[in-house]
Length: 391
Image 1 (spheres, rainbow, N blue to C red):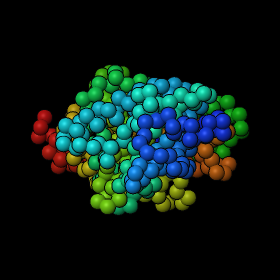
Image 2 (image 1 turned 180 degrees about the vertical axis):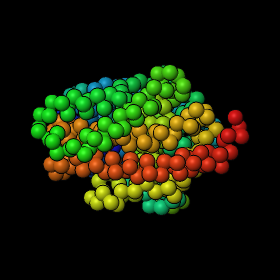
Image 3 (image 1 turned 120 degrees about the horizontal axis):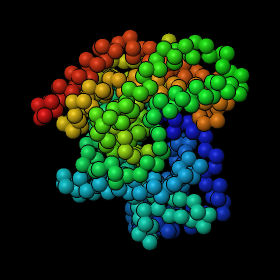
Image 4 (image 1 turned 90 degrees about the vertical axis):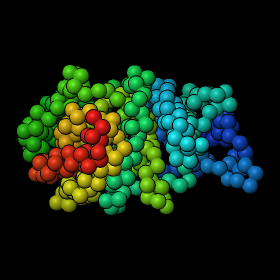
């Protein structure tokens, strides 16, 4: 979800100069000779490097990351979750005849002490993953085929983990999708008005007040046990699904730091929100913000193709509401940070978070305008998947 992508970390491995990468890399169990390491990707949370090793005539690549301790206070819990999830997925893939899961799924590289991560002298936490050469990511949806594969990638991820009990994982970021808590936080910062910005958001305040009923729509079903807790990704935006550069098919989900217990609605709502608005979260023209029903259909079809047979009818019935709730939640978070003085999300100009909130609220209006069609499309995609016949 966007809130992790834009988070401003207080510190990202400031010990780096004291701990050259050659020293860090040497502690991981990798064949061959270390050649180089370059900064990699556009993530703003962890320090990420693409490392190359020479092993005979082969050049092997790996992803090295330093976990940002300012964001993840207990990186051991994060790593336990990732270790559990990646091992579970690999076991399923091998049972399907895939001899080398590392070709299509994230795998942790062990340290020379057979650990899943490394603590260096400054107590920073490092980890290393395989690099999947065939994969690439895109920040925006290219077409309906891409939308289908993004949905299929998410569905496959949830299906592979459907038999992993959520109690096996830690809550690394408690309250991650507690929409009511975000609404309460907004109310507090609005009342405090420390930066005197409240008078400039009268329309947004009214917009929120008219939709307060959305906040508990998902979490109340968790409290009442109407829907099961499952292992979910929690950040399934478009660029967290790795796509095969030749076939265009989804390979796997990446960025697993937020994997923890939750409900599938967190993932589905955020994925659809990300896919069905081609203009993106930073759309400069609010009139360009749209909710594309064709893209919704494609992402839903891909999703149900993989995980439809796992879901209960109650879960399916709540998926349309999830799209609204998660969009509302993100808008609230952007607006609250604007009122707070832009302390959480990275901004490029003074009203950036306000504009982002307006984009999400405009998107929610677009969703509301086609709500019946959206619900019908999701239901039809589920029925067309045939999953309903197995219940």
